[in-house]
Length: 92
Image (cartoon, rainbow, N blue to C red; front, top):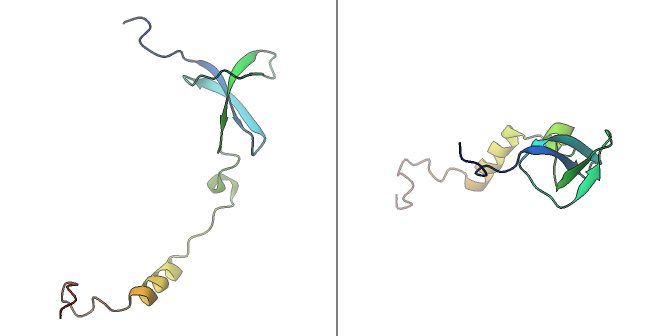
């Protein structure tokens, strides 16, 4: 295997500032910023916009989808435009 071909793989802290959450994992991500972790060691830290602690799907704040309401809205908007079976050409 060729040396120095692959990026460095090591411990990195990913931090979600909006949720006040951080976790230590291994990654090839690099950062100039560092943070002192609970174990007393210093690790590079990468700030992320969304994590499992702030994403609406995982927090339960996701907006529920109402499929019946979407269908009714579609029918109100487009009605029976294609009901004549003319293939949608608009000339029939």
